[in-house]
Length: 114
Image 1 (cartoon, rainbow, N blue to C red):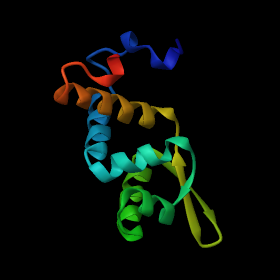
Image 2 (image 1 turned 180 degrees about the vertical axis):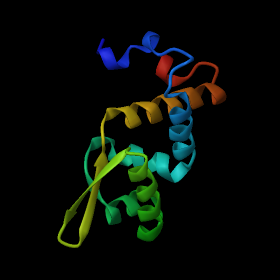
Image 3 (image 1 turned 135 degrees about the vertical axis):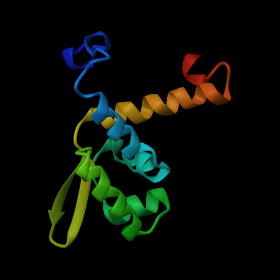
Image 4 (image 1 turned 180 degrees about the horizontal axis):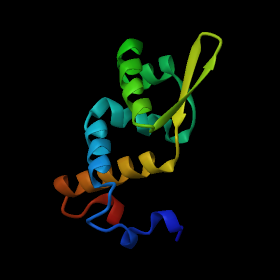
């Protein structure tokens, strides 16, 4: 197991608890979760993301600005187009774990346990 993923090394008195709350608040939006999931396989333009999450490019840009502020995504500019990617695998893992946990609220025996 990678050192940065060991769950037993984070204690309740961690100085990062309040920041973790901010990360959860940042991700407490369906569009932003969809954006993170869309970016799990790599870099995408704002327009492509807008098509995937079924929102306007302007709305997606606003969500991306918040994700960028939270350092969950990075941006690359190519001429007049902006391309976004996840900063690292942590946001993807966090969202996927939340989705898996959500399955438990709907199904007593979720598919990911099969």
